[in-house]
Length: 83
Image 1 (cartoon, one colour):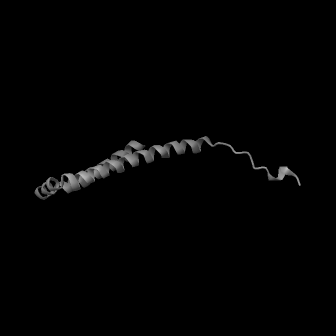
Image 2: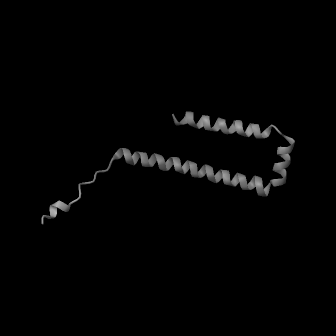
Image 3: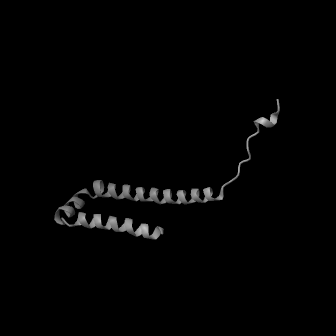
């Protein structure tokens, strides 16, 4: 038997793939930070400041609409920044 038959082909590093990996790491870092901020705000609104938050929402019926518009604005703004 010839040992050369079992040698694996030489592996080469694709520099574009490593750049993509760095980009995806950055994207997932931003996503992780955003989820952490969302969790902190949810705990503060739902547990710590529950009475104040719900009384503010009940007194200002327009506020949830402002939150939805602000969310869409953030999504559109970040998509323009990505280009």
